[in-house]
Length: 295
Image (cartoon, rainbow, N blue to C red):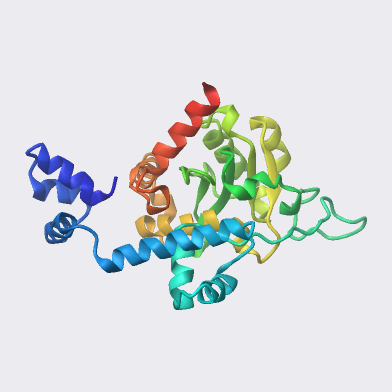
């Protein structure tokens, strides 16, 4: 359900539109403009956009999900649909359509005598050995994790996102953001998730993950690491961090946010309608996945 549809449902129940708009964080004028358009039905432009999205999805499926946006735009033109490549990129990004490339076999441990990519992080599994089912976003229970760093590198917030539903958890490390504090925070967050939904966690190669073996043993989860300087290998988490920044800002003292504050931010993001979920929320998709796994 979109925010506008939610306001409309409240209006139908005789709830004041102005207050409903404030709760949904939309302006009354924008709501009434949407309502007028809704009454008039979809425009030709909206019908054309829907057709283009469906065509992109069909081509993506026909090509075994190997076409990214650089190949998708020429393919659309080959099929007689002239479209700007930036428009194709936007639709693929908004609908989470990504071209899948063949993975390379990578080393899971450091060579003898070699130096770790970052101090204290040793004997770890790279993303290339992560189950291929993770990339499809069909099987729930695969998470990505990261840190958002505050002003002067003095504070941090731990972020976790489940890849299929985009359900998130935010954590306040108890004593800074060293490996010990991050370990304690991750254990607390992951224990909120049913054990059947704790399959894998993918992180970057930061020092704060030096105790990843203890994390894996404590919550029974397989931990993998992205390659250095490849943020797109954790694009779900990277995109989510940008969303969290809307609430906490850049260059701020993140220690000012308590765990209760972070839980409220997490809940707000989890319950807002998402286009990529056909206007279900991340919470809706996560709850459905939990029910399916525990039924």
